[in-house]
Image (cartoon, each protein chain N blue to C red):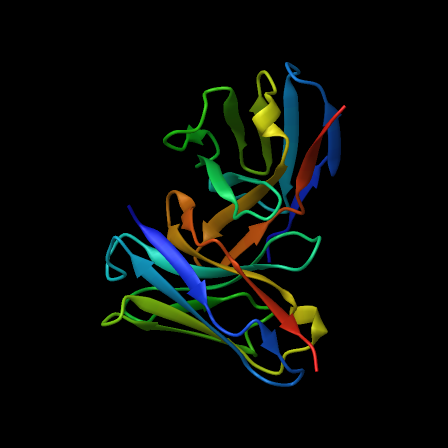
Length: 119
Length: 108
């Protein structure tokens, strides 16, 4: 059974870079059928797609975050990662990773990790 | 960018009620629409994909319909486990995926 697990610091200072990793277990990140994505949810608010990556390294980013976002993949570790630079309090959120399929949407999600931006 | 608008934002209903949530896209997305259920403190769960296809393991009381710009999620007989927030999401393009703002289904 495929599982995704987010990891990374729970507290980041303003203007610094947020870094998270999603570890995929029970399946290969190199599957040709899937992309892998990051989604966030500020406290009490809705879901926002951040971006997605294919195992080959092709990336797609939310235009509103594109200038600050980098998503990368490490197939040898079955992981993909998110970096969000120049963070502010508005970036405080629960960050989720998910498996993304062109036909089925986001069918497997990690449990989410809370990141707070504060000095 | 494609904008997704859900209505209502909040819905009060009783167990056994038929519930309908609407999602409108700012431009045609064919049938590239998914519905998710989210409970407090939990990750979203995929319910419906391609507008009307039921994800494996999802109860048949959930159904989706629509194409183009107008979509609906229907719960035929609301159960206690269904009180949650529901999100639509368009995936017309790999380049930009968008969620609706959510509909909270509350106990009346």
